[in-house]
Image (cartoon, rainbow, N blue to C red; front, side, top):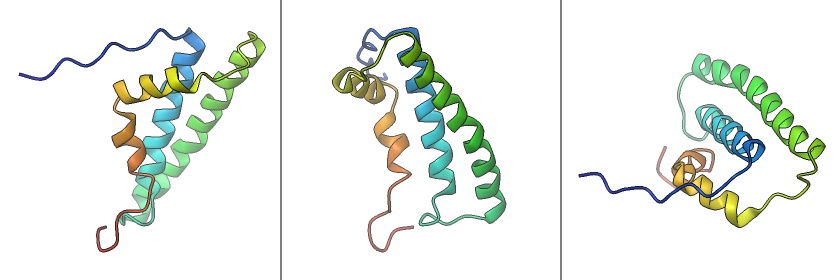
Length: 101
């Protein structure tokens, strides 16, 4: 039986959009990570998609700002990232430990 995930914290629609776009960009950046290896075509395709996702992330942040949501609530957003498997997804962007990769 799979353990039940904690509930997602209450987010505005714009905050949810920022979290979603951030994780999508992190996934793509992890696919481009040169320290992990892989083929250049896969990295190229991920980099091309990353440009679009970065623009979507920018747009989500701009929308928050226009709506007067001028502060990112780090603790709340970090909880949301953890619920959405953000620790694993963003770890792919980091350098692997020595001898791994």
